[in-house]
Image (cartoon, rainbow over all chains, first blue to last red; front, side, top):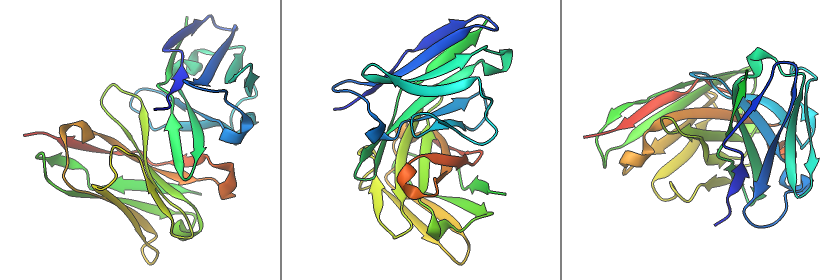
Length: 110
Length: 120
């Protein structure tokens, strides 16, 4: 059974840069999986951050970017702000109408 | 402006049934792919089901055979009929609008969710 992998937790200092990654338990992630990223704060619905690997959703600050990172995809936050303290989820489209979420990364800005 | 409002959640006994609704505004549900995504308490997000604009439907293995997604174009509403509910179906259920064009395969708008609690 295929699993989408993410770091369970990461921390970053305000103003710092952090890279969150998203991989597959078997194989490499490519643009063919249409990777997307979602941010969620406690008690709130998810918010779309990045789609198609590296396209920012409307209204998302340009400190958020996406890229291929070796055999994974990455969400990079450059110049982290206190409001970026949240959970981040990667989603891959597996084809045949099936999406898989990663387990999420809890990002702490401190 | 796109707006999604879920309703229909509540407390239900194991083995029971519940129907969730997702009322949409600002777009037409039958021209977008519409999804249900759930989140168990303290856990991550899990994709549940999709209904494509052309009518094709898919389900996650965990709900196939028990849940049914549908839509009513006249009400611009998407539904999730949940039967044979189990304790592990306890979650906040989110309605998520699919991207336009559909072949970008991401979720571009989300509702606020409705809580389903399966408990005896």
